[in-house]
Structures are given as structure tokens and as C-alpha cells.
Image 1 (cartoon, rainbow, N blue to C red):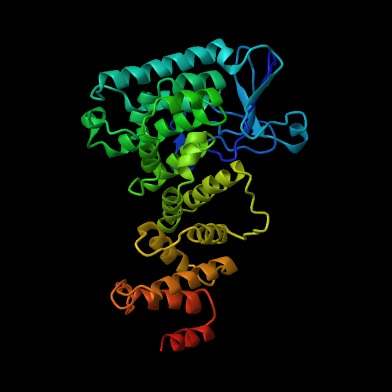
Image 2 (cartoon, rainbow, N blue to C red):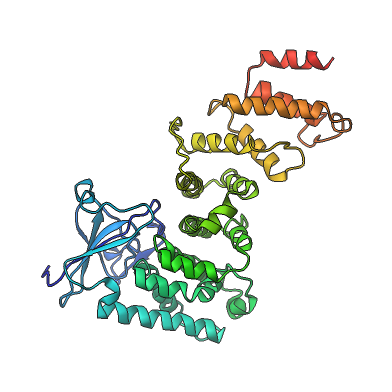
Length: 403
């Protein structure tokens, strides 16, 4: 490579958000299947050439030849490099041998401007009738890739209404009317639109500020991001966007509400996709890190143990689980993992408290919660406490106390 100018772009991120499936997302430059390669660049610790059309995940070390070839190479940031590039958790820095940033590169600027203009026109015209689907997808991929640059990210955020519509995060039925039966294209558009927002907002304080100011009801957005009715792939993308958003104080405040954390935890139980489950736990852990609440005592061997720990902590915050739909779902999900984790003493004490609350309820002991095969909600709680999460010998004593 002729190094007329090398740009090192370092964007630290706790989550790689542009995670496209290498099995289903391939680029084939010709008719020879042997020449196909993954749309997602797969990094290693050594410099590798980025092939045409590949998407570079956030969090990598990227260098670019500003000469005739405009070729790029990328690798995983190595520990020996990081000493000279120590970044705060919520910062993104560009270290360059030349005064130009990516946004200052004329070729990238032109490519970004053309792509953004195409997508804005598509949004304004409200019609997909005469569009080239591959061309539109290609423009969104360009924006998702270049959007991690600070300046480009701000420009995307300033058109938040466009990308929220494309992401399916606003109730804009008119926008999708012309392709309402083209489900594959619609799904792909929504995934890429979400990736554009994630790329633009992660580690970009100014872009996040523009985006936050465009919303009146942030809770509505959070509910859409955690909508279990979305397909698993799109939901994974949306949770990646949520991970980029929680550094905003207003969004963090909303996510700290028990109903939102319970809802997020229940998505874990609903999903069988490991990537989605890990994304859910990462968002919750990022929330704790932002608040300085590192769980140093937790050494989880797998995601189920991480989930069980978080679920117990969240349930302990509920004064009375009866009537709390999300809480009841979470407790039931947790019971299905019994034997895969050790119940925390605080959680067992909380269950004891729930049993005592139910004993004092004059109408609930015999009539509530018989759907799971129990004669009462009290029976259900006692069995959870002793047979599921505790020891079986305590079950006999618990019933003796009732006589």
C-alpha cells in the first residue's frame, strides 16, 4: 500500500453493533461462488484488507490509503496500541498523521452526501414504486459504515425523522404503503436504518444531543425498541441502538424504571437467540457501569447465570409481585432455570416476604393464580421458595405452619 496519508480511526465501543450474518449476507463480485465473501468485515489482530462493499464494525482500528487506491485496512485494537490511545468510555477520538478526518476526505464526503441525499429523497417522496432495492440498501450500508465518524454521525442525527421512519420506529404507515407486501425488503430497510442510527449515535455526544431533542415521548421510543413482536434479527439491532442511547441521561432515567428493566429481562426469557440474549444482558450491564454499580462479586459462567443474577436483583425491588404482570413473568422464567444457578440469600428472603404478604391477604389465598396447576398463589410461592429455589425439607415445615 502506498501510504500517502494514513488515518487511524479508533472508536471504542462495548458492543459491536454492525453484526450481520456471514451465512446469509454475502457479496459476490462475479459469477464464481468461490469469490464470494462476507458483507461483514471479520477482524483479527493483524491488518487485513477491507474488500469492496464490506461493513466495518465499530470498535476497530482502521487505516486508509488517501492515494489513488483509497483502500482500507482494519484490525482489532491491540493492547500495546491502547496505551497511547487511552479513551474515556464515552468518547471517540480520531488520531491522524494528516490533518484530515474521514469526514474531511473528499471521496468519503461525496459518497456520504450522495447516499444521504438518496435516502432523504426516498423519505420525502413516500414511494418505493420505482426504486432499485439493491441501490437503496447499498446507500444505507454506506451511511451505516461512515456514520461512525463524528461529523457524519451528527448529520444523520439531524435527520432523525428520516431514519426513525426507515427503522420502523415511528407510526408512519404511509411511508411503507407502496411495499407493504414486500416483507423482505421492508425488514432489510428497517435493519439497516437502525444500524445507521446506532453507528451515528454511539460515542457521539453531539449527535446524541440532536437525536434526543427530536423526541417528545422517549418512553414510547423505548417501548418500540423493546417490542417483542419484532423479528429476532431486527430486535437485536434495536437493542444495539438502545445500547448507544443509554449514555443519555434522560434515556438512562427512563431505563432505570422497574417496568423497563423487567420488560428487557423478559425479552431474554422469550428469546432462543444467543446473540439477542447477550445483547440484552450487555445493555443492562452498561446501565450498571454508567451508574458505577459494578457487580464485582458476580462471576457468571454463562449468560443464563448472568440473567439469573440480574433477574433476582430486579425482583427484589418489587414490594409485592402479585398483580405485577412483568414481575410475575420474570419470576416464572427464572423458575425454569432452577438448578442452573444458586439462588441469592437476598432473593430467598424476598420470596419469604412475598409468602407472608400472601398469608395476610384475606381473599387471595384460595382464589388467585390457579392457572399453573396450583390451588392458590400461596401454594405457588411456597413451592418456588422451597422446592425450586430452596431445599425440599423446608416444604413440609412451610405447610405445617399453615395448619
